[in-house]
Length: 329
Image 1 (spheres, rainbow, N blue to C red):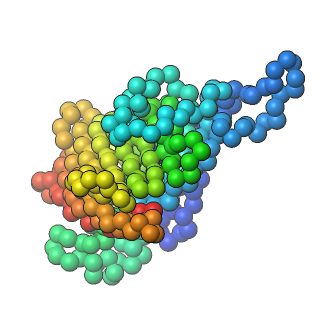
Image 2: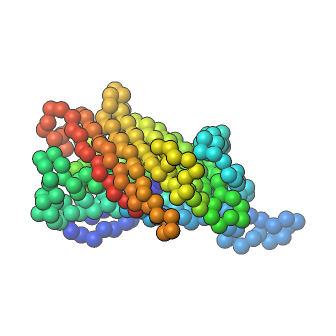
Image 3: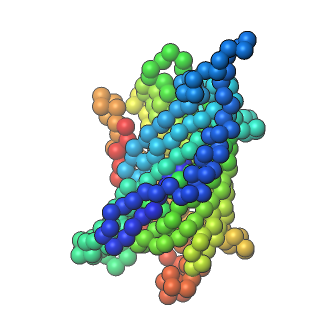
């Protein structure tokens, strides 16, 4: 959900420096979290909040790795809504899209997409040998679809807990609210381009893990603006769903599958700038609680997405094939 840092090119080490603006925003938000005080005039509780008022989550993944700090803005802990059907999960989150009660600050990195830029810059011969045909480079196919190497984000909204109290095998959390993200680099064809971008979106997002199933989803729309004048500002609409079934109760195409579709529209004219789509199939190993996954799809980009020095020189649009292997736990 959120990212941070400054990426250094030309063989220099990677450094992550939280922008001063982000630090000020984070400090201000943390400062307004209500203090927890005892009743009847007793001294205030020590500044460390009780467990239900903050939480730290680390989620590793080959394509999106994140570390998030969850803060409650009221004394009410994250509500438990228990076991629900997939449809009811979405309806519960949509019904709670009002007065925000939680703040989430998160940093994220896209490991494989960044690795693609590193290979192209530091091992050009390997990258050239990955060119299978005139239009298919397997390194680009494996890393396509991510337009930034990292980001820092702040989410303001509501959170609900889908886990079953007292059960170690049932975990789940969902979000609905506003998300602000920013970063300092853009990825184009496995090349890092300096770009102080920021985006604001409204989203419904969640994850639920049980002993026999893992489900995640994200529905969002927003705007992304670029500091680099050669990259087009856009509005976007995105849908994502992913489901892993270790012991499916019935055989349907929705078991052990996933998809994502994102459409970008030019900010001033609402003309399509980019279509990003993939479908995914998973093969679970129940004994190891993991699964092999393979996604395939495409990224279509309009010739108007880039201008100036970043223009490709081609008259028409371009299409990049996605071939994304992964391992889920």
